[in-house]
Amino acid sequence: MEHILKQFCAYGMEYKDHEGYTHYWVTLLPEVQLAYSTIKPYSYTEKDKFPLRKKNPTPPEIVELNGSPEPVKKIIKARKIRLNGKDQRQYLVRFKNQTADKDKWLEEYAIPDGKLHLKRFRASRRSEKSHK
Image 1 (cartoon, one colour):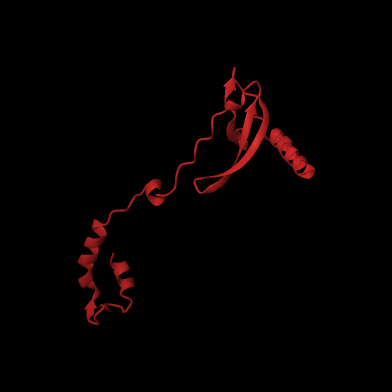
Image 2 (cartoon, helix red, strand yellow):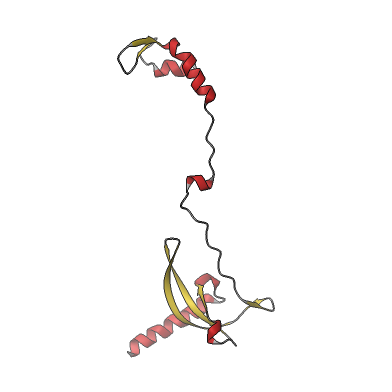
């Protein structure tokens, strides 16, 4: 403690306070020891550090029949939505042997065989644009 106080008082054995008065560093020692002994480390949780941070949303559940993902018939539409301050793309998916009222908006990772179906969907959109 004395070593820290000596370093703080770089003038040697004496230091000047904010009003310009000169003091002997040893007179500060009891106050500094009291201040250091009453300090408790602040422990904080992740919630305290980042109060505006929200937990990652759970991915939408994949509808399953007999233990396997329900097969996708086709992707009908695409849309961009804003979730938790980030733009995310969702696709309207129609499942095989299902009616239009069972269509669901899913993100790419939640679509069974998503890359294959998205490739077909994008190709069909390009061909529609070229025919117009």
